[in-house]
Image (cartoon, rainbow, N blue to C red; front, top):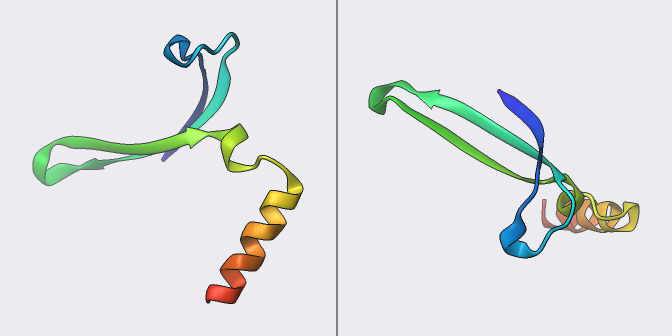
Length: 61
């Protein structure tokens, strides 16, 4: 499961909220909810970054 929301981090000096995408799941044996996520603008900075990343990945695989 995942969710998208806006987050303002004043500790980093941010003046406007940024979109975050978080994936999470329930781990029943320990009754934990485990999640991981990041800011969308850091994941896809530019189309050039995306193309470069996919090309590097293809070289590795």
